[in-house]
Length: 293
Image (cartoon, rainbow, N blue to C red; front, side, top):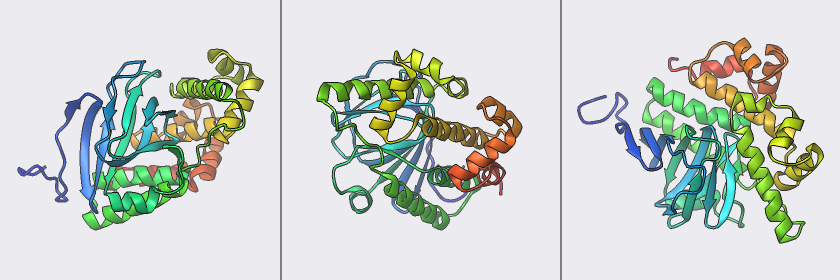
C-alpha cells in the first residue's frame, strides 16, 4: 500500500471501516466499476430499518445468507446468486441465519446496467452458474495477486456478462392463489435460511430439513421446485460446491477434508460434482483462487 492510499497496481483500496451494514474489507476500481468486498456484521434476525439504494449495483454472495426486501420484493440471498438494485430502491435486510455473510458489490454506471440488466420485469434476485461463481472468485484472486487494470477490467466485463445471462432465473410461483403463494414463498425462504447454516446444515437428511421448517418432505420438495424451478437436491448441491469454493478461496487445500465436511461420499464424488457444476475439477479451481500465481 502506497502513501497515497493506492496499492502496488495503482488501484485505490480503502482501509477497513465499520459500517451499519457490515465491514468493508477492500475496494477495487477498474473499467469504471467499483468492486467492494463486504463482510457483514449485522446480527438482527428481524428486518433493520429501511434504507435507500444509492447506485446501480450487482451483488454476488460468497458465503452465508440473509433476507433482502427490495422495492417490496422479499427473497433469501445465498452463494447460489445475488441481487440487483437501482438508485432510490427502498431496501431492508435481516439475518435469520446469523451474521458473517460475505458478498461482493459491483457498482456500475447507468448505461452499463441498462445494457445488461434492463428488460422485462423480473425478480431482483438472480441465480448464477457454478462457472460464473468461479469467475467471480477468480477475479478477486487476480486482484490479490496484483493483476493490472487491463486484466481486471476484462475479467469484470466477462463476469457481468455471465451474471446478466443468469438474471431472471429465479421464478415465482404464479399458479396459485396469492395467500398460498405467500405461504410457499415463506417456506422456501425458511428452507434457504436453514441451508445457509454451512456444512452441518448441508449434511441434514431431507426429513430433518423438512422438520426444521415445519413441513413434510413431500410438501417441501414439491413447493421448493414450484417456487424456484430447481429441485432441493440440485439447490443443495449448488450450495455444497459454493461452500467448497469459499473454503478453497480462504486457503483450505485438503480436498479430502472438504469432501468429508460437506457430506460427499468421497473425494471423487466431490470432484465429479464440482466438474459438473463449474466445468473444472476442484484441483484446478484451487489453483485459480490461489493468492499467488
